[in-house]
Length: 316
Image (cartoon, rainbow, N blue to C red; front, side, top):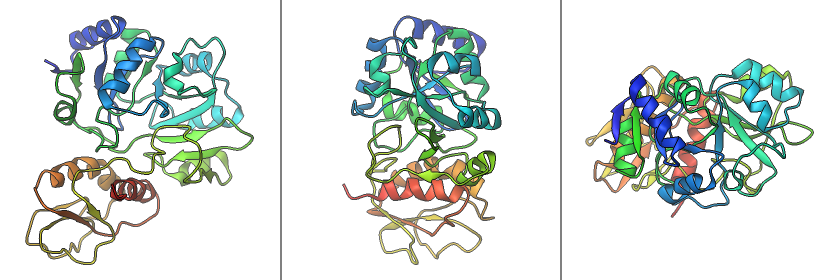
């Protein structure tokens, strides 16, 4: 303990821990989450304490099905369209919360909206079904640090703090969910993520505005500095300087005499997204004074990858 294979027995034990007010880590298709019963304010407070997370930063609530989601929030037609297109999956929808939703106020950071998602990962779905409660779950790491895509990453970040860490293997997507707000007259993209912007716009048959950088925090992932290794990042690098390691992309990586990881030799953005956080974590442990990052196309999933890299590179 606390890392255990995500067997049926372990999932049942994790559900019991949630019912007892404990926090558990579990895999989703995006990253590993640190979960608590979203109705239990004291349990949710343990998430914020474990992550050292500012309390103005709201959490995403995971639910097993659309019917459950509708008991928590009021969806409009656009929300139903997006849910039909992408759920279960890596899309989070922010909508007005219902007065009788029963979700702890700490989850929403005092807002009148709630972020909800139906995950696609079989372990996450089994945990939700067994626990029979909505699960509030941000990424299972210290606030602002690199998101975990393997159980070992969670253990390295949080140690014995979670009651259990369910090991479901590496996360397939490797980027957090895309977050879209349906709280206003028009949809607003709050966080780029594993569902590319163009797929959201195709489902809605119109462009979707993106929240301004200085917009009030309405969902996770909007802090200016986030997803960050301890080692400074140098973006759009055209060379590798002495003492740097390399995060490469594509068939022609920069010459490098030190440690180098290529996100995708084939230039595949899906592969790059899945490898991004684990690669940053490995390079961060190399003991260099900097990480040189090759340019990545700012299209499709590349938008979300570059968003993560820019936030990670923000000056301390």
